Length: 154
Image (cartoon, rainbow, N blue to C red; front, side):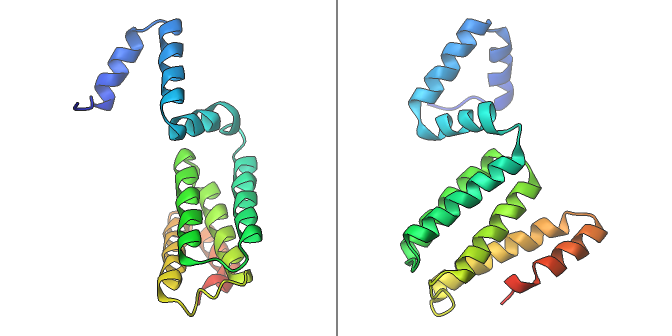
């Protein structure tokens, strides 16, 4: 089946009454776990981005606490979950906070990522994303962020 465009879906959703719309949203939530997670973010967490960022940082800390010496597969999974959760939020500040926290957690963990090329590349990719986020800020803020996150560079 070919999926309809966002514009077509929006036109159809506008025509529906509240009860039909509620049924569709609940059906989406039952259909896939990602949809349920997105609805949870939109309904309960989107109004407080700082709390959401803290929640994601706590999740990262929990992963590093459970696996102080992460292997490549576990590190990939942690990054994948982090990326998925960051897609829910459109806040660049939340994304920057979480990515920096991840990098700092990785550096302070027992994981020997510098010795393993693939793991080192994962870390370097996060640094690249952090730099790109910082470039999107005003010049004064860029200087402040670069100075604050200087310890992350290798």
